Image 1 (cartoon, rainbow, N blue to C red):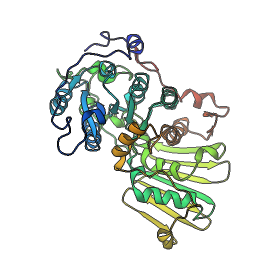
Image 2 (image 1 turned 60 degrees about the vertical axis):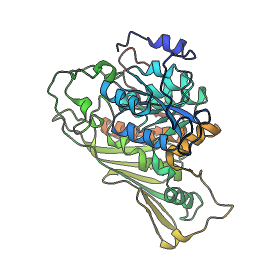
Image 3 (image 1 turned 120 degrees about the vertical axis):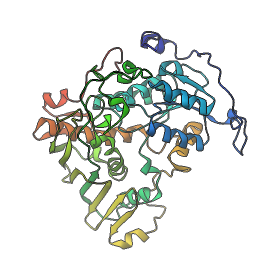
Image 4 (image 1 turned 180 degrees about the horizontal axis):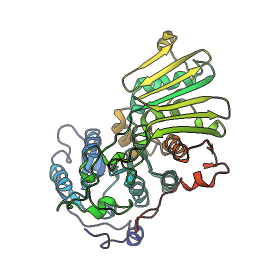
Length: 418
């Protein structure tokens, strides 16, 4: 479907109108198999029917979401999902968002689309579960946060570790002062990969390549939409694993420690940027932070880990578990006067569905998503500038550095401006 069928202006003006699109009501929608009827459930649509989007969407369905629509630039993917759920396939997400019987969307599209889809959903009055990373530039993050607040939408970031009890407990230990005053922080995330062909080839007949590109710069089709080493290592569509996976351990960092309240950050970093093939995001990065309060932080690749070191011990958190020194910290019982973080019931998907119903914030809220994503963007910019930069986390800009501030934004291909 071409972009000209429904213009962005038409979409914004008509989000409150419904697109008449009948769908099959399945037995589960009527309350079979012990599930509540559709009138008591949250109707959900999927934007981006690839592996990650599909996996999270299944989780939302298992948590009680009522699937009614699927949207993707790949015709076979959206039609397969629509058939499975007895819902409606869409080539253009704006048509799906215009439905007045849709409550929320799961956004698992290409990284360059995440914020654009989130903002459009917010304007259409839909809640959203958005996969990480948030934006491919920091100005997108700000636009995302502003839209979610302005339209009072429920936002869930795809940082599933927040719904793990051991991650929550570790952060509660830190915030409750069990390791004393924080002195050092360590964050480790998986590295990006080189490769991917840059040889032009025919666009597959079932792919709307123009819609797949969206706000990304136009370029010949080189098979990037099919995966391979992953478009998420290509700077035209993403920022790489410094944010795409870094979002997980960085989110735990932000949950346990308020980096945005530490005063200006001094940041220096180095990395390798490959140019043999399409992949050109930073690899083997080594970024060092010094916060105004004296706390130091290192951010590097190699795993999935967050460590808080204080004057009386340390706590290390990974997806698989938690460790501490002294080890007796892990047997601590938190009392009523200690810090207790939000408990996520029913997993990350269940927490989102419950938040949509209750209108209370989801565990991975948009403000914390922006705080953690800022660390990725500041790191990437420090590397690309090749020198120390100073970031003001409250004003959300670099201090006295025009070059670095210009890198906070990216050009968007028309008509996909924010």
